[in-house]
Length: 237
Ligand SMILES: [Zn+2]
Image (cartoon, rainbow, N blue to C red; front, side, top):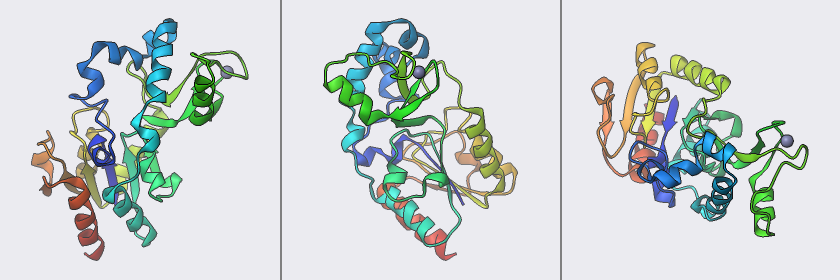
C-alpha cells in the first residue's frame, strides 16, 4: 500500500497549510519571498526574516494525530506500507513510522543544509544559534549560506526521491491520497501513475480534487477520524 499525504493530514496537529495552492505562503507575497530560493540566496534581510519564521514555527511543538498514528500502526502490524509525503513536518516519523518508509518530496524542516558545501546539520542546532543572537547563521564548515532542507519555490524536487516515489506508485496495490488537493505537480500525477499500473485509488480529502473521477473511493470525512477507520478496513480486507 502507498499513502500520499499532504498538508491536510497535519492540520489537526496545528500545522496550517503553507504551501498548497490556497496555502498561507501563496496568499502573502512577502511571506512567499521567505521561501523562494532566489530571494533567499540574494537578500540577507529575507534570510533574517526566514530564520525568525523558522524559530516561531508551530512544527516544533506539534504532535502526531490519530491519522499519523494509524499509518504507523499499519506498518507495525506487518503490512507493507510506503508513505510519500508533501509535508516537511516529520510527523509520520514522530508517530513511529520507520524513517526509510517515508519519502519526503519537499524535504524536511528538521534539517539544515549548506547551499555551498551540502553539509547537513540538525535544525535545532541552527535555531540555538539564532536564539543566541546570530540572525543569519552561516555554515560552520565553509561559511556558506544555510537553509532549511526543504524544497523552496524555484527549486526542483530531488530527482532521486521523486524517482523512488514513482516506483512506489507503480508497484502498489492500493494508493491512498490523504489531505492533499492533488493540484501540485508532480506529486499529484503519482495518483494517476498508480491507477495506470492497476492500483485502487482512494482519496481522503475535505475538498474535491481533479482526480476524484479516477478514484474507486472518495472520503470527505475529517482525516483524523476517517483515515484510522479506512486503514483498519483495508488491513482486514
Ligand atoms: Zn558549507
